[in-house]
Amino acid sequence: MRTRKLHHTYDTENDNQIEELELEIGTFLDEYDVEYPTEEEIMLTIHAIRPHVPVKENKWNTAIKGMASIIKQAYEEMFYVSPLFWTANGLLFLIALTGVFVMDGNPYTMMMVLAPIPTITGLIEVLKSRNSGMAELEMSFKYSFQELILSKMLVVGGFNLVINLLVTISFGMLNQEILVSKLLLYWMTPFTVFTALSLLFVGRYRGIYSITGGVVLWLTSSVFLSQTTVVERIESMPAEIYLLVIAAAALTVLFQAIHIYKRGVSFETNH
Amino acid sequence: MKLTIKQVTKTFKEKKALDAIDLELTTGVYGILGANGSGKTTLMRILASVMKPTSGQVLLDGQDIMAMSHEYRNLIGYLPQHVGLYKNFTAEKFLKYIAALKGLPKEETDEKVDEVLELVGLSEARRKKVGEFSGGMKRRVGIAQALLNDPKILIVDEPTAGLDPKERIRFRNLLSKISSNRIVVLSTHIVSDIEFIAKEVLILKEGQLIKKETPQRLLKGIEDKVWTLVIDENEIPRYQSQYKVGNIARVDDRFQLRILSDDQPDHDAIQDHPNLEDLYLYYFDEEETA
Image (cartoon, each protein chain N blue to C red):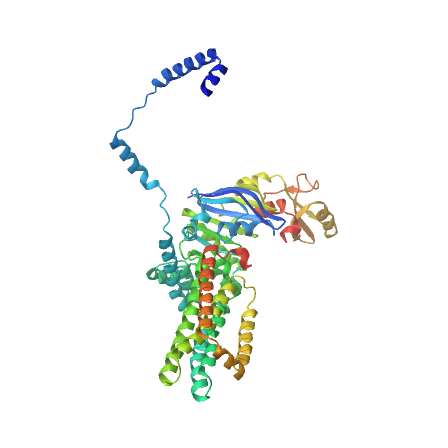
């Protein structure tokens, strides 16, 4: 039905003209007849253009390369960290041992209080370039500024981790009554939380005094944390809560590190 | 090697620091002249890839430098206008640290550090702490770090600030020597720094590139505009208010004025050969250059 109706509306003269035109174009195009290439020619063309096809980025490879670069740079950074940082924070090891075995302090509270201090004070090292007016220069180097920040954080955090593990092992070896698993939970919680906060902080940092302020604030709060009633309350908390906090903080560390790496730390955010 | 600056604009809030700059740089020394706030430092930062343009692109042989990322940074040496340095490091330790950040192979580092220390004349002071250095010595450490990776593109912002005349000549000769196979971009207030070594002079004014010529052609453009005139002291203010007056030198008990003017300022005024200082004064008001 529909076809018939359409035929009625067509102008037959126009149809003839179109047919003639098509024929004319067909004849004209025949002069430019292109032979279909052989299979061999097709393959040769594919081989020739293959090197120019952009390689699809392998995200895992890129991430591994980025990590390797940060670890390599962290190794270099270790030799340029101020000796004061190593010695002052190394002393924490002695303070913890003295506090527990000489002054009969609570090993768990002691660990909780001392655990994040190397990371907080280490921020001075991490932000050294900005405080020394070196940030602009460092942004122009092969290792990107964000890689430098992360590699310095790796040195500081890694050192903090080693110190805490050493103290934990020493406590466990010197006093059989101390529960190593509980000790681990007690220091890992503030350590991961402060590492996460530090990473959040380095992206927004404005003044060195805030680091000093952070240390003072934490030490002041630790006086409050050391009070018997507070200690009892902390000790009564189930391990699951600690684990949950540690997991949340660890995830924040991971996401913030990725964020810093991807976003970069531009000149504008540092001046 | 070609560095192309394509329609680069940089805006800070309401202020346009750079306004649609178009440039092409090939090997040789380019001197950027401009008054304070003309956009020199912003352009240098964009070229050093530490600052992103608001719009436009910088291309190295057709590739966007921001996309090239570390590949580009590997090719450049940069000396910012203000650089603090790590004061507790010795010059040698500082340069070794920078070499590590620039990704120089360890086995090449010692030799390269020796070489750049020698180039900037700091071999003797290599074990001294940077914090104990004079302003000029610190600047030389800055220059040394920029040369560490044998950069194909050297970007130096006011490199001779704080250097004494002897050090400036030494630096100028050094730039001249190393510029044969690399692009050197140098911004300065001190016109004599670039007068004899610049392949081209770029004049920036209020964020716009107003001239890009060889020094000779730029000078030719003002060859009939420089006059000297000897007058009495009490006449100086009148000329200063009517003309752009450059050098004022005492000649016995009178004063010789160097005047920039399209017309002869006085029938006693004698035309003189222009130099780049005259050119600078011609394009920038005295208060801008101060």
